[in-house]
Length: 195
Image 1 (tube, helix red, strand yellow):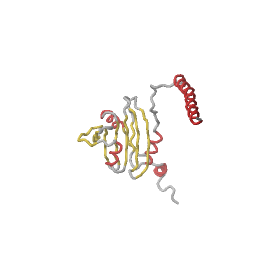
Image 2 (cartoon, rainbow, N blue to C red; image 1 turned 180 degrees about the horizontal axis):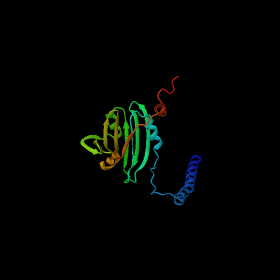
Image 3 (cartoon, one colour; image 1 turned 45 degrees about the horizontal axis):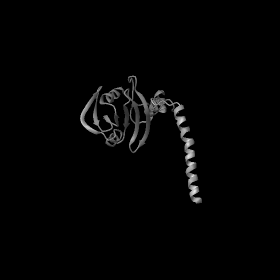
Image 4 (cartoon, rainbow, N blue to C red; image 1 turned 90 degrees about the vertical axis):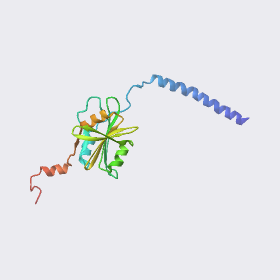
């Protein structure tokens, strides 16, 4: 009988606890302000990472210039020389909140394209962007525009339409910055520093 009484006491205590916790949680939910329409994706600045990557990468790093209003940078990273090569990533949301990313690598192109395009397949189509021709890839998750050049593969990929991917590709400016010590050597007069 004592065991039965202990079980009844435990259930009773649990019900009393719930009777206190549930109303407090409900009142908290109702009276603490929350904005469900607020965009959970945060905009990031990428200038510092871009400058760093342009100094460190063994290729000219691409980033957009002059995009129309409404494009928001959401992610940025640079990872130097692993087995996949040196990797540059810059992610955006376009004005329709579709994802568009600029991806670059000096590693094996086929594996890199497969990974960043979420396994999109190469199509027979191409897309002219400015003076360049980009190869189209189509996939269940992402579409991609790919340009392979000597020493670097550039992929513009995401959930956006080919038109939007092309808009991003057209805005890209690839640049390589000299390291500070290299810039100093260029500015020295000939024969300077020799004893």
